[in-house]
Length: 370
Image 1: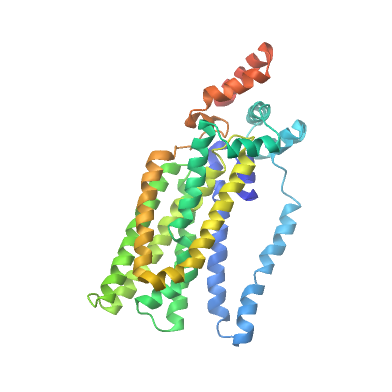
Image 2 (image 1 turned 120 degrees about the vertical axis):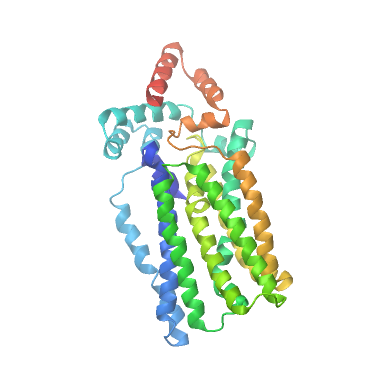
């Protein structure tokens, strides 16, 4: 939950999308390494292999302790703690010039003027204004849709899918699973390159449409195999191509862009709590999908389960079209205006500031925007 918020806080607007995608690419890299370790350790005795697979995860976990010793604190948090000097020092490290650092500091200080206590934040999230409601619909919706389209079902149960398509040996199943992990990781690199060049929304269109097509083809091929229309070899090939294609389309769009959007659309006073709620919803949805997938497959078949995922994925295309704005290149404070919040935000500031301070506020915001 903290990683995307922190990265967004310290990243310049023109590179925020790429940097905020890093948690997704390293998460996918971890999944790929997990698949590879399963393949490598599978030959060990049954009482040892799974313990070695799980124990290997402690090595990257330990490295986090050393990283935390050197990374700076979030400049927005420092400003909220009345430590503007420390915030300026951090901004000087992550910007190209002193002028840019000063402009960002002024913008952050203006946003921090309208921050509210934690109790008020939760009250505002539970009973949101129309502006905040639109933000929550977009932020929570994209978190929910990322998981309900079935990504973790494919990550965890791809051997079950390939077995249902006709694969028989463990070597084939593990090899195909490694290919899935490689597809998921490789295409996130493409997303990192493109997200700040072509924008968030185009990548979401490509991603959700591609996922829908892959799910529909996978469901159709498994159905045709069950009715004896499609030979086993062709079904295996289609299963591998569509599952890897799903991972590729997921990773080039809704996988990393989900967290990019979630960490940049909320105003500063609500950001940490709102992103936390979104990640909690994301993880709960993941748990429901993961724990129910095999039961759903038993009830309606694997093909039936992926037909349902395809329908939900088609709805996600509509959601992106109707409710997701383009945020590329905009500062975190400017994004509020995309939801119709420019006037509301200024009204809040006007209530807090006197005439002289308000004039200075407008000058600083105008300077930061330019």
